[in-house]
Length: 278
Image (cartoon, rainbow, N blue to C red; front, side, top):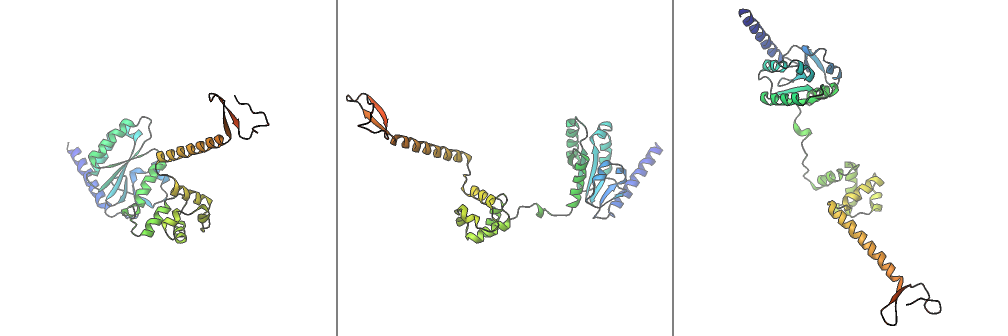
């Protein structure tokens, strides 16, 4: 019992030394625990500087952010391993990632268990289905460490010109330069929307493909049901016009009693040429 107690105290003292070491790590490096030597995902980490260090988590991105790595195959063989690692970490670090390599066929139950475990211990669960994908997650978290949300925050456009350029830039293949050129050429949004194909084509940098897409954006109905209704009405008008043309080409001849009639094409000659009327 005394020996076990001494071993526990020694282990706790070593962990405390490692915690002190965490504060002295260089912030620009991705720090990798020495226990991760031989992990095949390390061969795919090429885009961020990294070095091995003696520490409690498997990876440290910054003084307040870390990650534990777990293979599901290893987890199935050693189910208590992850509990021990979480216990060693205590409540250190504000952001704690559990990077799980899904390398088994039947992964549903282990993933559900780890998801519940992460919620209980304030971990973010990240799943990777290949070694390359796992390495990309580590690189991405490190590369964006310390960045604020301005990179992904939606930009607010305050002026009319900015709003118009942003709207035109949402059209496929139309960039900001094209949008600025179009607004400068036509002066306002109304003129641009009503411009013909020929007028759009003379704008520098706007080719046939961009012209076609701009015309579709300005003139295609937003509602697909309305578009179908409009096409159906156009077809009905064409059919009515065709029936009218056919009616113009026939003459109705009535019999003496008004009971029988026959249709004779108007291009037949009535009179000297034989015309059959009942």
